[in-house]
Amino acid sequence: MSDVIDSWGRISVNGRLVPAAEATVSPLDRGLLYGDGIFETIRVYAGKPFMLDAHLNRMANGCSMISLPMPDHEQIRRWVREALEANSLSDAYLRITVTRGPTGGVWYDFDQACPTVVILCKPYAQPDYGNGLILRLSTFRSDEQSPLTRIKHTGLLWKIMARREARQAGVNDAIMLNTKSHVAEATSANAFWIRDGVLYTPSLDCGILAGVTRGIVLEIAREQGIEVVEGHFAFEELLAAEEAFLTSSTWELAPIRSIDDMTFAEAPGEVTRQLAKLYKECVMSDE
Image (cartoon, rainbow, N blue to C red):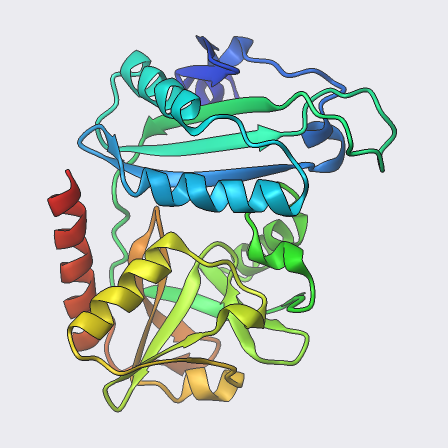
């Protein structure tokens, strides 16, 4: 266990850099007690956090939704730079977490806040997806009526359980439906599929997170003249696709090989390969 903790190097807690094994937050921190916080996960390429402003803006929107004061963006940028430099990182995984902090109040009192900001980072290499991800349909549902499904908050137990369920079944991840049985997302990624040259993805009102990578892929596709349809789709429509992939900041574009008993003809498919190449070019142009 100590080796796993040490792999995180030095962690920034409210701007103070300490070895991971020594990093602490108050036992009264509401992030610990109630999952009262917002976080972002970001890919770092050549020492630069990709789309950092977009992630901070999404974090600010999430904080606003739960009435949590958002720390100054420039301060967070400075702490991010310091954490990356302290750990001598180039290509890395970066996580920024903001909680309401140790207010000492009762669980339902969120009028007070003394935010805690934790910044974690460690080396990260792009996974080898081989012939594509193996997925299953989750028994857990996304609640499209809850505004919390649209923000990246720290209360993720339902998604953790869905991923655990998938791993116990011997697959990589799970596709989740919402309460209306429409396709929503994977446990930590947005879902896309292609049929007859059209790119499909669930709309935001399906109870999904507005992924930063999702937004870039949609923009790239439209620039390439690919027809894009965002909407409400039955699970069977995903299964009828010719190719499919997941998107996230860490995974980039991850091709899907199969879902339950259905195997896609090709993984990655032609459109997936095209979009993945253009996404990588977008990353490189930002370095």
